[in-house]
Image 1 (cartoon, one colour):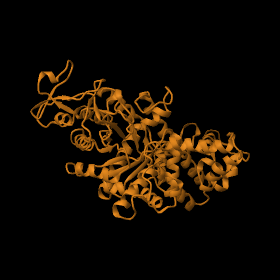
Image 2 (cartoon, helix red, strand yellow):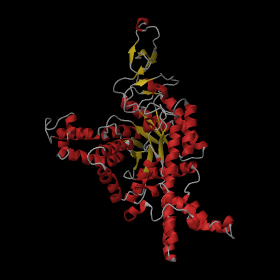
Image 3 (spheres, helix red, strand yellow):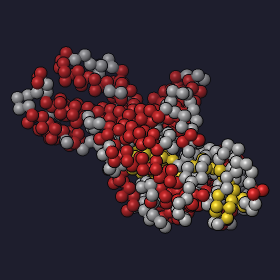
Image 4 (tube, helix red, strand yellow):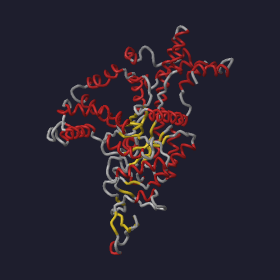
Length: 532
């Protein structure tokens, strides 16, 4: 409800005034600032936002969505503040919650790799924290507007401020939450999914790796599960959404098959060409002609009417044939959409190559025409090197340059190419990458998984070098505070950012002139008043 509607409802409920002399206007303000009653309400509302965005993308591929991976509520809050400050709206802006960053930065076991080595509760806690921070940003900004309302001198000024309050855009946005490979069996996946949804997640991203052998998508040693096993976990996520009343909940089915050459088990086929048969046909095998071709403990299967022995490693894992990754990816995607009821796909790739991704997606679209992707614009890629190599290869193929005009190795990273035509063209392609991949490869959502990990590392490195070096305080002032002031970053007034004015307002609501406020004339935040 709008502020005006809320106030009218309170006036009808308390025609003689609220108990204890509480101001109805103050109560209406508090109810307005409390933008969501529960985090489950957030999941329901944000699921509808995502569904609307998906429909808009289907009509116009330029309307793709974006997110940055955040490992704290403050990161998410500052991201949203920056977007709103720049664009005036948070339209098509999401938050990505990375399991990698939870493992690396948010678990009590220490800084650990992306191998499902963090507590299950850590993901739930981070979703809760992010939404607490975003809702507090709502409170802070709305409180400022209500301060304007109280200061308004004419009715027209009052109505203008009320219009801003009623038209306020919440900082709460959809979270795409990484549930890894489900953290155990299908029931464990279902139970954890419910906790993530209750915390506010409207979208769950789950991958087709084996839970107890899970690896980061950009490392070696990945082991996938048979498709019917993955379908069961997709169903578990859907059932969790439905049970909790989040009918519009979104599921992202991720396949790591492009870089995964192993499987833990061979599925049982019950009919020719079924999901199990489609998965098994890609196994690396050798022919079994006689009993002498089989050793104790070997497994033998029948493929296309022949007895074959699957290649098996000492750890018992089975190998896929080399060069079959793209075919397996396509089949994974079709299975996830048609059998598992997934809404979006995620194809983990080794390099950021638009043509490669588009080729796979177009094959999926032959079966599921409206297939859409979430794509990981990963910091695991050396973007500068990859794009410069792509430009070099394209220019050589077109005859624009000779093969020896540019190096074909890491020398392309040299700063001397920053202003070279090749470096400039690579940067132009970087600038257009998300637009291109959304148009050509069906990417609905572009995300960067680990930007805040790297941003914090670089920021602390640069500040520490200067502060503990020759620049001392200038390192902080010139590179942090002065930039905050000039760019209008609201956190420069750090007391206000964390809610000191909220506290002052509430003290006034309850105590009137007796309120002991922090925001008086001696508050040092007043030094930033002219630039806030």
